[in-house]
Image 1: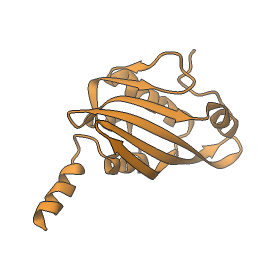
Image 2 (image 1 turned 180 degrees about the horizontal axis):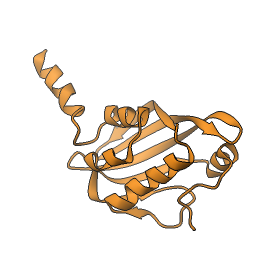
Image 3 (image 1 turned 90 degrees about the vertical axis):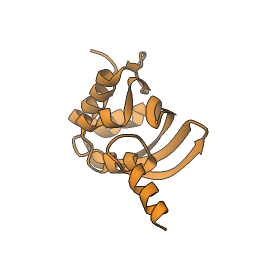
Image 4 (image 1 turned 135 degrees about the vertical axis):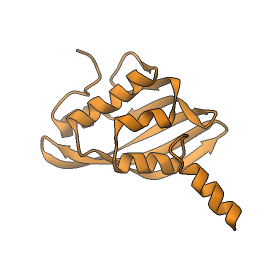
Length: 142
């Protein structure tokens, strides 16, 4: 039984990535914590952007920009699955936009390398996001 507890604790350590870490991060998101879960050469593909975010700084900046637009944004894990080094997380977002509180759903497809996020493809309806928030996706361009 102690072995199981140690494994669970290892999954929740500050460094590395797990579904539990994803849920904990998005319960109280802080872009400064991104470095604990991603590789230095992480690539993030966000909907509504022609270019992926390349590298830790650019990746964390994308998250920071979204949080500037929706400071109370929170994501709840709805379901998840793994396939080798791939992790799929379907989530429901909650926040406050131009028309008040909103919810919407999306999904992340995450490729892990050495227990950290090396690539992330984020999928959600950008038109719906812009409708609810009252602004364009904040990372789409100037």
